[in-house]
Image 1: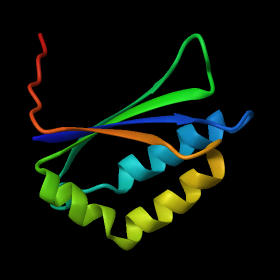
Image 2: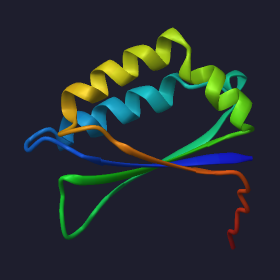
Image 3: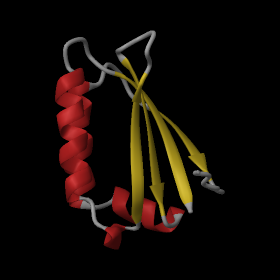
Image 4: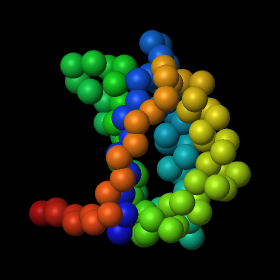
Length: 99
């Protein structure tokens, strides 16, 4: 598996719109894209600071999805809600733990 951590600042008053957009995107994502799961986290001390973790089967599938029309639309819509460009951290090895 491969994962990416995204850190972004959300424009004031846009957090609710972002939550709606993420729900829409998650409902449209398919396993055919290589997408496994995503997690969206808002900093409890700074509600404008958002972290998202997206997990794909492989980096190759994630990079292919980045080039898709669906991702282009999402990037455009997300850009309207963000205050500045996001930061990205890529992770090559993903180990999952759960009870």
